Image (cartoon, rainbow, N blue to C red; front, side, top):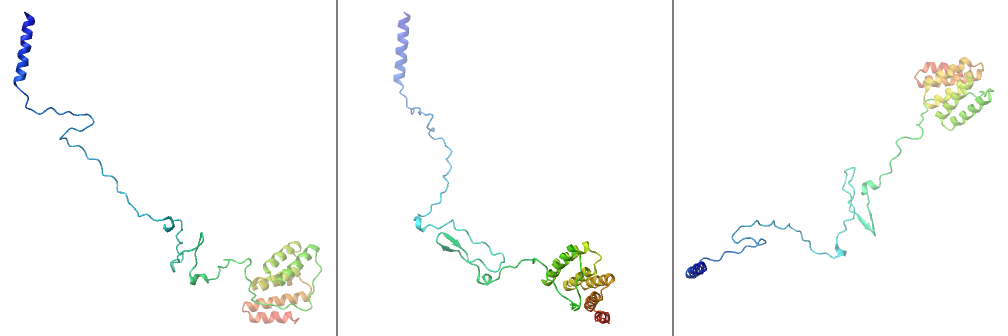
Length: 234
């Protein structure tokens, strides 16, 4: 009996479904990889702009390896364009600068000497007998003085005076070097010191000649005339 009721209920349900057909559109089928219809999706960013250059053959391409000419340090004129010679690049100086002579050294090896006064040596002055070491230095200093190496001659005579400090001839030679070196004040003092130690009249006359030249260089004309008189033996 129960089975008959179940079968009757199933038949009635099927009949009801067949009597009312579906008029709505079918349900949409949505895949997970595809966006649903009617839903706005974010737009992808636009592709970056790419600059397109016209094609150039390798022979006509510009040479980017050539260095730009250096700036003109003097600011007188702009540097000329580069001149290509083979694979090397050479630069030419402006005409007004190419003819300039090279810069000279800032300082010379030895300072220039200026002779402000000259005292002629006495004709009868003789070289005294000195100690061997002092005599060697005195001869070396005289050679340096004649070669106008006054700085070297003065240094050599100072070495000789450390050996023989009481030798008036060495003081006389140093006085002449200082006079020819352009130091008349020192020359007069050194000649006077030589006179204080000397006993030879010829050496004293030579010292008075140096003193006369030093006084004349200092503008002491009266004192120069008196020294010249003594230099002549008067």
